[in-house]
Amino acid sequence: MDDHSLEEFRRRWQEELAQAQALRKRRRPEAAERRPRRAEVAPGRGEQASGYLALAQGLLEGAGRPPAARATRAERQDAASRSRSPPAREGAGGGEQLVDQLIRDLNEMDDVPFFDIQLPYELAINIFQYLDRKELGRCAQVSKTWKVIAEDEVLWYRLCQQEGHLPESSISDYSCWKLIFQECRAKEHMLRTNWKNRKGAVSELEHIPDAVLCDVHSHDGVVVAGYTSGDVRVWDTRTWDYTAPFLESEYEEDEPGMQPYVSFVRINSSLAVAAYEDGFLNIWDLRTGKYPVHRFEHDARIQALALSREDAVVATASAFDVVMLRPNEEGYWQITAEFEVQKLVDYLEIVPDTGRYPVAVATAGDLVYLLKAEDSARTLHYVYGQPVTCLDVSASQAAFGVKSLGWVYEGNKILVYSLEAERCLSKLGNALGDFTCVNLRDSPPNLMVSGNMDRRVRIHDLRTDKIALSLSAHQLGVSAVQMDDWKIVSGGEEGLVSVWDYRMSQKLWEVHSRHPVRHLSFTSHSLITANVPYERVVRNTDLDNFTTHRRHRGLIHAYEFAVDRLAFQSALPVCRASGDTAPAYSYDLALAFP
Image (cartoon, rainbow, N blue to C red; front, side, top):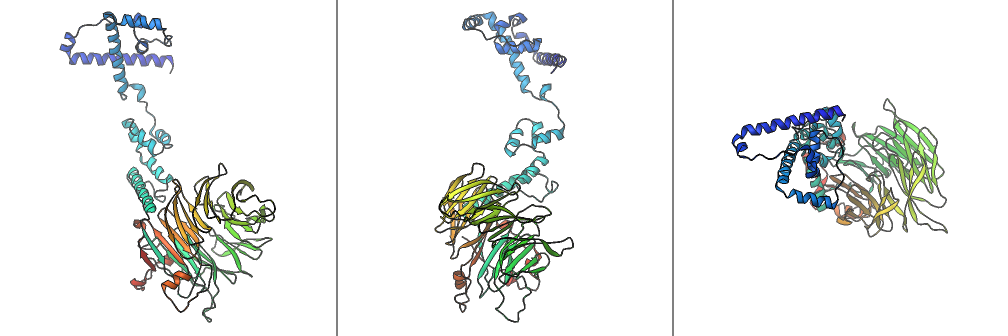
């Protein structure tokens, strides 16, 4: 503030104080006459007042000098003795009256000019958008002006979008986004309570007679399963009464029972893919119908299958070849890239969010390949005699377990590689058992969860390259694992599914089935688990009942912790019941309450 502005401020302040005093005198003339007159404090008697009185007088009188130096003990005692005299009390009383008036005026924030600075409303919104919900609540208690700004619909709409509430809504859909935010927070708290107390519904998806479950995959509540009979079935667990249609194949039915087994199945929001033992690959579009839109044939058995979660990209590995498929602009599927590797592929994953050219990561024994559609196969990692035991990828990183063998045993580790720089970022863990599963894509930022044959589930901190938490979770090895911001769900080889609150290192609940847990996927309100048997041969074909199926043919469980989120009709046309279907057979589930 320059000198001219400061002088103008002092002048206006003195005028306002004088007007206020004159107004009080007019309102109470009799009290003013009875009140004894007090001696006015001279400008030169600042030494009798304390520091804050001198500062107030200096502001009103225009003194621009800094406060006086701190008085010694003798000077303070002398001033205290003088303050006990009657004239000094009168002077101090006048100063106290002045300071009281100053404090009252400062409390009247709307009346003091420099507390009522008017910023453009858009600029204030841009400043407040960097605050979270707690800080906005505190700002709303400052003044009426700040309350209007802190409760603006734009700010609370952005908070809803940032925390994942109603992501597909626009700002014009609701009139009070603060209330919507509070309701979403209450529902989130209810869901967390239901998860902890295992309060919800569980459905056992209906099995196929005379068939053994081979592979299961799910995406956002939609489940696909392949069987030894060659059948592929799809469930939409997001509805109350969901159908489970069979996805048709192009095999001739002249020889019933001779259809090859299903090796792998994958699904995303619009596609379902199945690989068969004889090297055939079927691709279905869930939005168009039950018949495949593309059929591809390999010369040998398909050893690995991957489907992008977001895009229409499929990758397969057969013998020493890896093929990437995707539709062109006209919708016809074609080979985008083809690679040749040195060993048989064990694991195959597609990197998300790669744009026009798809990227995949494949492991073959002790080799890890980075496969880019516009480039040849590049070796990302290779150490002789140290095979890869598990694999997972995110948009920028790849994590895989490495088994240490040889004379110098260093312990089994998980290596995290940067896909852009193509170099190792972290070496995590030092376990005796093999790492059987790792989840990097679904984990919170800077964290990763893994399962090991030593029956432990570990949380790794990618910032410090250390183990943040280790849980003894299962009786046998861990076969599947996933985590979010507060819980871990793990599956074991003994068929046990466990839910943990890893912030407290406490097991919440568990469910046991006969076969190993081969697939596990959960969202904020649902959980899908699949127990797939080792053997793919039905032992008792004559006993077609639920007990035989439960013991020997595998199970798929769908848990729902928020019943109000279930829809009455599936969003996928292939999972909608036809009009001529009997109502009693329009769903395939056995409902139970745990």
